[in-house]
Image (tube, rainbow, N blue to C red; front, side, top):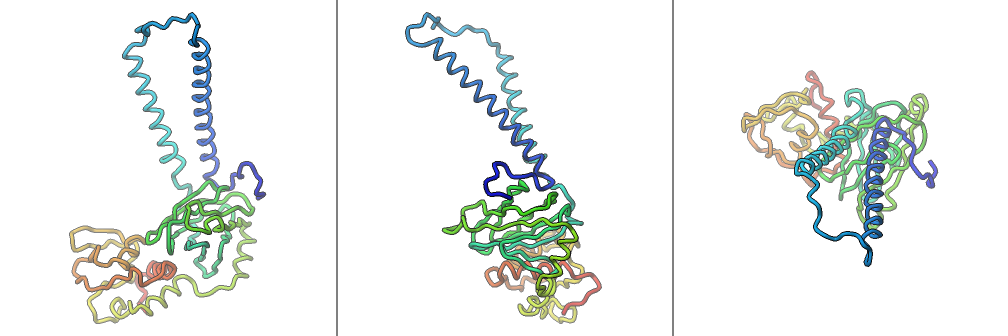
Length: 314
């Protein structure tokens, strides 16, 4: 895409609704500004100094019902616009079950991309066209913002808290990737490209990449390195919850609540294990906040999510 393009192309499934809403808002705002400008000019000419216009008390011509009706109508328009932007065009356009899951770690001043199969990229993101994409993002330092103008998507990336972004690229091409949140002195250099390819071209590209271990394999190594297996392995004699088949299961907590194990719960259980204590277990697990990097935490979570109910721990 040329850097001098006046308006970015609509290259994702949610781009057209965003543009439609943008132009409608622009049209409404332009109409209101034009109306105010015309009224200001008319009143300035009619009531200028020395004119013969009447300047007595305003006539009592507007009824209370009209004023109440105008106020309520304006309120409903504001509520509709709020719903349109937040509830309408802001809704995901694809299912996360069939989406291509990719992990993104932001840091000053680069984007690190980790594909589930083991391929990794820096400041580039290769995607197949017409395939739902589910980005799971976190930051190693400050707040960043993942922004692809051609896709009309922007999502803040926070330290210590996962952010998710779901979209479907629909046009083959190379598009700008920017950070839309000031993150330090080299913020303007935190740029990259999203390359949308035909499915066959994407498969060929992925096969050519130097693959390390997959995320789940990396997570298994981190699981062992951190000593998690000493308590959570199936053969362990210590009193700790077993992790086989834990993801998406229901867990009863000591305070009487029942929660569904998702990525947010697992992340909190690793960093702040005393926040949600599982019923029947003592709060003896140490917290790993500050002891594990965001990238390693992503790999560890991928490993825990991959454990089926019949698989034993390493």
